[in-house]
View 1 (cartoon, rainbow, N blue to C red):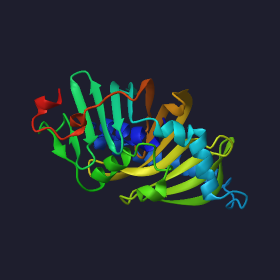
View 2 (spheres, rainbow, N blue to C red):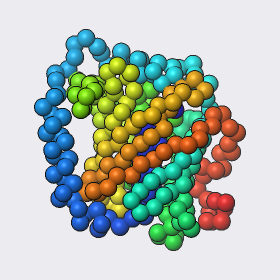
View 3 (tube, rainbow, N blue to C red):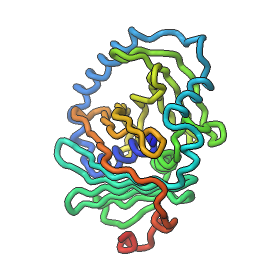
View 4 (cartoon, rainbow, N blue to C red):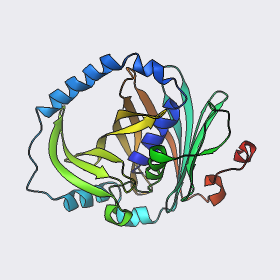
Length: 276
C-alpha cells in the first residue's frame, strides 16, 4: 500500500512517546549539525521548478505507480504486521485500516503495550507510561492521528479530502532527482514529499511532529516497494528525529487485504480490559 503518513508517523510517535525526551535533548546539538550539513549539500543541487510537468501530471503518475484507482478502490480494509527496531528494543507492530478513515496501530515490547486509534470521530491513545487508561487525543497530536488514517495517503484525491498540495520544483538528493510536493493537510499539518522523478514513488518525507508537547523535525526514508494485490507497498521505513542521534527502522512483514473488521475495534474503550 501507499502508506507514507498512515504508517510512518504513528509508528514513530508511539515509540517515542514512551521514551524520555531528555535523552534526545542531550544530543540535539550534534544532530542539528548533521541536519544542517545535509541540508547544505542538497540545497546546492536544488533547481528551479520544471516547466515540463504539472502538479496534476505528477499526482496522476504517482497514483498509477502505486496501483491506480481500480486496484485501490477494490480495497476496503488493510492489515499490516511488522517490527520497529530501535537502539534499545524491538517493538512488535500491527496496524489496521478501514475505509473511509478508520485506523488503529498497536505496539508491543515485552509487557509494554501501546495503542492509538481513530474511529472517524474520536482519536484516542492507550499509553502504558501514563497508567491512566485510554484517553482522547487533543490539539496537534489529535490532528496527526486523523491525518494518519487517510486510506490511500494525501497525494490521492487531495482536493476531495480538503488537502492542499504545492509543487516546489525538483531537487537532487544524493544520486536521485525528486519532485518536491508540499502537502498541507486539512487539519493544518504540513509535510514535504520527495517523489522519484523516474518511478513517481515517494522515497523521503520531511515534516514535524509532537513528542511530549514539544515539536520536533522529522525525516523518513522509504524503500523496498513490493506489489501485493495489484497495489505497491513500501516495506521499509527509516525514521530520523531531530535531536536523536540514532535512527529507528520499521520493517513490514505481512500485509492482508479486505479482511472483515468490526468498527468496534477502532472505538474508544470505556475500560482498558475492553481492548483485549
